[in-house]
Length: 209
Ligand code: VGL
Ligand code: ZN
Image 1: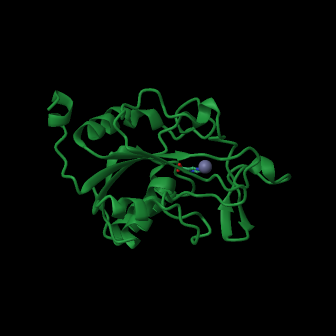
Image 2: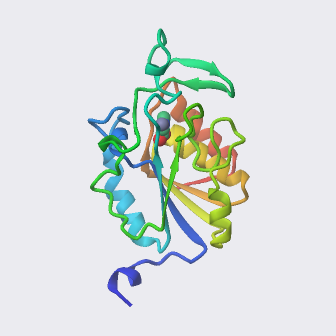
């Protein structure tokens, strides 16, 4: 057994999901999360502990419906009504094939077994790695994890109050037990969204580490 695999101690029913640790969510990126790259040492430590790791990647086509630039006259970070309800308008970010959409180079998870891309449908955003923002379109991730025999998920990454939050809530709803490693997450915090996210996760039975 190699030294790296013997250092990995987590049980085979457990998987680490690293959410959207991409250039555009780090300082200098198009939708930078404050201190977003400060989580990388903690994320890399977690990744080294887990045998099984999944990465998610926000992956929007140019002109995506979540971009303020697609809605002339609208402001950045404004909330508008779309077919499925409220949608926050973001700067253009994580456009497919661009440097901003690539994983942060300092992320060290070469043994990740799946990269789950989301947000690729032009008119539907997807904060959750499980279900798009219309709350009906599945990404297939729950089925994948179940078929792999995973029962317990640990989440970390960006941003605590958007993609980590929605992924954690949907994971609970799909029947997984869920931990969120808060020291390995950072939030965007629009209008108190970070505090609301913490409360919502606690109320859903998610264990905050
Ligand atoms: C995210 C806003 C828009 C995230 C993705 O990864 O939390 N937030 N797209
Ligand atoms: Zn996005």
